Length: 297
Image: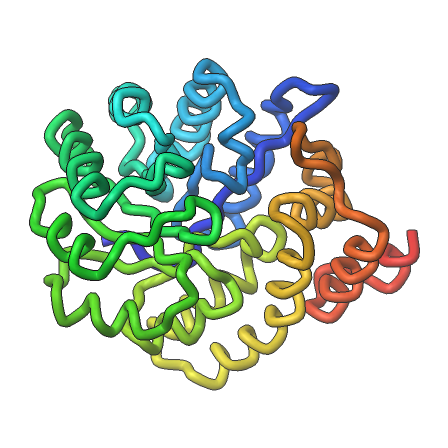
């Protein structure tokens, strides 16, 4: 079962191209800081703007750098079932431990269509699949009934839930067995998601606060509620700031302040506004990620 703090990795760019050195450094830093897994090529990694060759390069490099120290859950989803199968096969060939597959955006399939989409992937590729349910960006909401139906398939291993509905994990636990993992897709409710029956978080915030994000998850697993509450409270302003404008613009800016990558995105994404940047800097300082001197730089 996948669990803990699993950053949905940003994709560093340099003059429009992949910055693979920065990407490799980010992976090493994440592992050193205690992250429990890695997700390359998710939507936080600007996957809609990546070519298939770039996606394959990033997944391959992530697996190579991680060297089995933490699981790699490759983002392979799209709104084309055939393309998703192709990318998921590649992830399997490259040694990824699982695939994170988003509900087909824009197409807006029915619940039967969602089931058919994921069953086709399940039948085509022998790799654990994490369903990614994010109605706010894909327009379609995969129901509890559909997820429970899919959970009976051999390769459907869990769900990344970005609905912000904290009834969902509790309901899902009544419909699935212990082999099905539930991972939050919303940093702001990650602690509450654990209390409702979840096992971890695929996180935006962990890109820039990996140690604190991992500490929160470890504290929960250890039954240390006081430490978890302290981590939660330190991260709360940051969780909010990183979504004050469309992600990943705020987190890319935050990463640039830490020297992790350039503050560079691909259109149609543009850098965070000055107002958002100020909010991000304040939240990073509150969480202990920036000194006052660096904040003013």
